[in-house]
Length: 220
Image (spheres, rainbow, N blue to C red):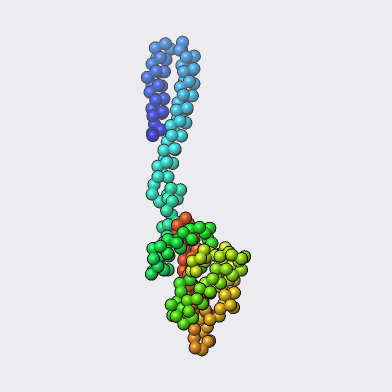
């Protein structure tokens, strides 16, 4: 919408109506012209205000509709971080679609910025120490420092939701004391492989996550 319409209207009113009247009737029309001028100014001011409001509103709507606008772009976080599903597919390249969906649902229930520990088991360690022992260690990660019958893995034995980083690494230290053979000790002979690979994932949006491998998590 253009702001010139009101200005053009006022110009037309001045030259087409007021000036001809003054030229025909002279000073006798001065009171009428004075009242008419005030009325015209008020009317034009109202139109200018209305047109300006509409003009600004149209511009605001146009700007908000532009791609990439922060207020309109709901995918800003998705463009900065991987989707939670993409992160899980990277961490578990051999996992079934059903398992990925289960892990994704579990992570989506966590609050934003809550850390999630993901452990990918080392098959060599499992072969040497049995799968039952592996399950015992994962259960310890799931229940350590929690009340009876509470778990932080929803039974997944691989994805563990913590309230903060302090809790996560406190539990790691506790497990290291309970199951030292689950950790790689540089000084041990013969050297023992770690129980698995640890990933730290942080949820940063409805379906987005930031994640990285912690290569020293299972190292003493």
